[in-house]
Length: 259
Image (cartoon, one colour):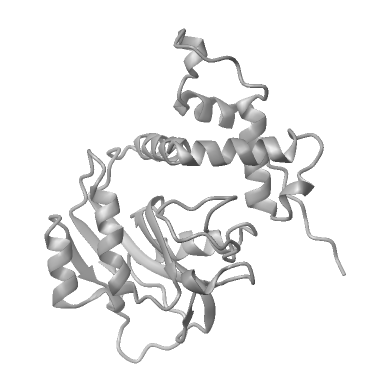
C-alpha cells in the first residue's frame, strides 16, 4: 500500500508576515502584565496547520514542532477566547481588500454537507442523513461569492438545511459591521417561514435551481463556489469526519470540539 503524502505545513515568510500582522499583540509586549509565552506563535500555528492538513493523532506531531500537548492547549485556549475566529475574520477581510472588494460582502451562498461520525461521537449530537446516507453530523456553511467562509454551524446530520439556516444567519448578523443583503441557496432553503426568518435580518433569499431534466453533476451559477469550499474541507483529514463527542457549536475546532 502506498504511503500517504505528508504535506509540508511550515509557513513561508510571506505567509507568516500576513498572519502575524493580523494577530493580536500579546499583553506583555504592551506593558499590560503577563510574561512571554514559551513557544513561538509561528511554530504553534504551523503545528495546527499540520494536523488539519495531514490528519493523524495529535501525539504524532513531528518532532520539529513544539510538544503536542503544548500545541493542543494553545489551540484550545485561543478557541476559548475567540482568537482563532478573530484571526480568520481579519485575514478574510484582508484577502477581500486585496482582491479589490469591500471587506464585508453584501451577497453570500449557503449550503450544507453531512459527514460520517466516528464512534466517539455520542448519540446526542449525531443523526442519520437519509438522502446522503451519512450517520454523523452536518456542517451548514455560508460563504462569500468567492468561496471564503463567512459562518458555519454544526448540527446532527438529520437536521434539515431549512431548520439550520436561521441560526446560521443569526450567528452572522450578530457581529457588528455585517452588510449581508442577499443569500443564494438550493431548493432545500425555500419556504415562507424561512423567508420571513431571513427578512427579519434584512436578508433576501434567492433559490438557484437545476435546469429541468438535468442529471448528474451540473455546475450551477453562484452555487458552485460553496460546493468548492465544502469539497476542499472534505480533503482535509482532520475535518473530513466528525470525531468528537462535544455538543455542536458555531466555530469548528481542531481538538476538543466538533468539526
